[in-house]
Amino acid sequence: MVDKAKVEEAIKLLLEGIGEDVNREGLQGTPERIARMCEEIYGGLDNEADEHLQKQFHVENNEMVLEKDITFYSMCEHHLMPFYGKAHIAYIPNGKVTGLSKLARTVDVYARRPQIQERLTVQIADALERVLTPKGIMVMLEAEHTCMTMRGIKKPGSKTVTTVTRGEFKENMELQKQFLAMVKD
Image (cartoon, rainbow, N blue to C red; front, side, top):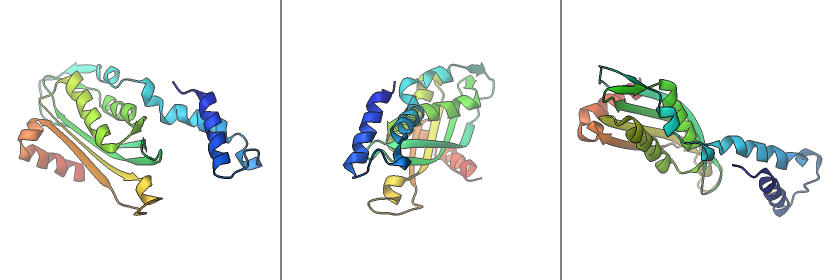
């Protein structure tokens, strides 16, 4: 739960710390706006992904399920700057599937926390493994990090790609190739 009063006070201190006048017309209301924004962009701290994945359906077909190009936005825990991109999630059902929107909700729960991309990728795979117990999982995230594009090395357009493979995906290179080919389409 976001403590809005603490966030507002912190933003006032930050603005003063960088030499701004917190009473300047353009900054009036900024601490309150930032506090409301924090409720939204850090809302994943108050949610558990497992609850979304509980909605399941029995299936006879145990072929790959792929949800690709799931847009996500997150905040780098090192600089509190955004990183954003696309998540691609595949799994081999073990007699049950979840609703496709539930995969996107799982991504959102974990992305809406102070985060690093490597952990985000693992958390998504862990949730699927824990709740669906599929025969295999592959998760790939592609993201641009504003901490690399706006500051430091300043390399806009560079992308970071992270993957996690489990079960049949880890053991079967052909499945990995099929996943990659489907993601590129």
